[in-house]
Length: 233
Image (cartoon, rainbow, N blue to C red; front, side):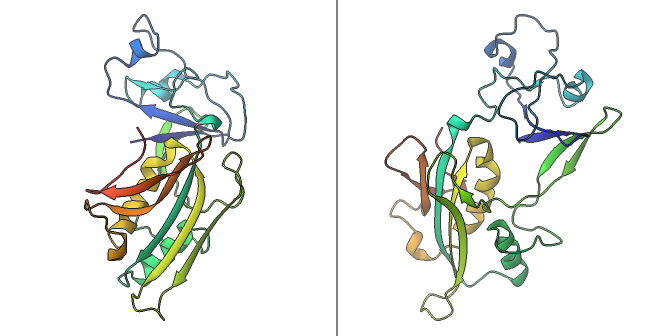
């Protein structure tokens, strides 16, 4: 599970928890002394070098780290173009439709969530005490200009009431970082489970769109198989 850390001042950083016993060695550490992780304020393009309190990080587990050297820290050079185009069956409830519209950025946030239910963040209060809170955000709601993939980011949802195959058709073009694969994948798996049979491939996978690394010229087919999105490894 990926967790995000936010201080009482509203600064946001990505916090990675790993069960890998070799994590210290992979990051070049030569002893067992805890390091003081650094954070990057939200919206900043460079690391501030400011240290978070050691109890905040280490209270979440011995192997919690946040470091510039860690390859899992957000980097602009890791962005992908995500293109989703799915026709879903007429099996979505009114409350699910509201939640889906919110994820696409075309509707308000519902009072409760049923599609993707957990958005954990670690909040450091003014006393430096870490508390895990839920901070939901829409997953496919990007708008405006793509910073790396070019073109415009957008999402849409249309009724298929007048077509033989009833239901809803949706599309979304987003700029996505691998750190977002897990949460976006939960939504895509939910969509795939309700997709029309036209999305079913010969191998049993469900085609839901395309994914392109921002430097690549040709996208890869994105599909869901056995409840898992085929993200690049």
